[in-house]
Image 1 (cartoon, rainbow, N blue to C red):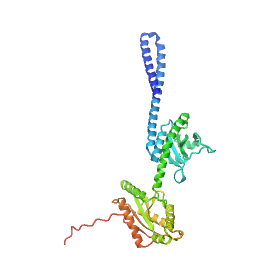
Image 2 (image 1 turned 45 degrees about the horizontal axis):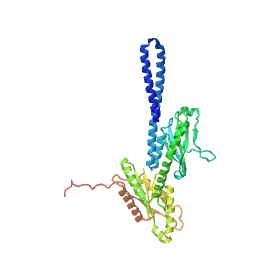
Image 3 (image 1 turned 45 degrees about the vertical axis):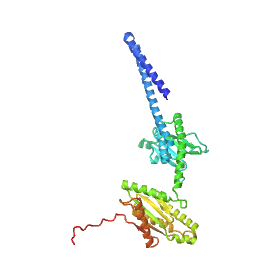
Amino acid sequence: MTIVLAALSAGLAMLVVVLAVLLLTRRSRRSADDGIAAAVAEMNTRMESIVRELSQALEHAEEQSRRDRVLGALARSIDLDEVLARTLEATSALPGADAGLVALADGADGKPLVATLGLSTQEAEREGVIAGPPNGRSARSVSISYRYAAEEQQANGSLIHSGIAVPVECDSGMLGHLAVFTRSPERSFGEAELRELQELAARAGPAIDNAKRFREARQLADLDALTGLHNRRFFHETLAREVARAQRYDRTLALVVFDLDDFKAINDRIGHLAGDAVLAEAAERVREVVRSADIACRVGGDEFAVILPESTVVDADQLYRRIQDAVASRPIANVGTLLLSAGVTQLRRDDDARSFFQRADDALYKAKDAGKGRVVAAQTEPPAEPRSDRGSTA
């Protein structure tokens, strides 16, 4: 690129010298005005063309430099979301690219993990799964073209019209696809854009693989091996983070803390191995009823907790009742019907993570003292300050 820019600059300088000579010659040869004027016009045209080429080369060099900086930062990050965002940022520099998409084959729950830039939710859902050849072989690229009904095209002039996707690979195999799209009906991606996209995918693949492995390892470290719920460490880290976020943005936050009634007696009767199976079955039933936004954890022993972002104590009470119904709806082998006791509460303005959890935990023990299968709501308003009787006399 540096050689090209130097050559263009030298050519421009030479044309300036020639133009100067012609202008001097024009002064001394008035009789050749018409010929010189034509030559000058031609030189002006050529100079304008070279200036345009030089400008385009400079713009391309700047875009290439920016893309190199973005991709160079990929290897320095192990956060998957950041790696995907930087990869998509690099695709936006491709000529004609209005949107980008990364689709990884093995996301959570068996669904593809999709990250986008410049695509709406509906467009991302439509473009998210990119199929290869029907014979199962790996294609060098997949070209995508869309045709719309005339009325749809008139109603929405910013539809995706075409795109191109390439595989994202690492040493262990194929990870997914990287794609770019254009909203222009006249635009298409050629061999030059394909080569640039392949280079991006080749550089992004190892970084994405490393970030995925780190996320998977971190997720395993955050899970309780017996129940598959989040563990105690993750619970307290997440609770502190959610409390800080709720306090900062004045959002609601609720908490449920519960345990299995008479579980110690169950352990004594059927043994700890069978008791572990009871815990695992109860945790599975808890997972069936919590929302995707809720954070279910095993705090320790037979004690569990669920963090409910953007929720109130009423929501926490309702969740406890759903969990109670799910656990008690059918007997667990060797045990029969299980009941739960719970404490629920809502974040107060004077709370930190410790006081928030302590209030719910205290409510749990009040529920257990009151009987089995009960829930107690902790105080959700700070206690009123004692009234002053300064106006009274003895």
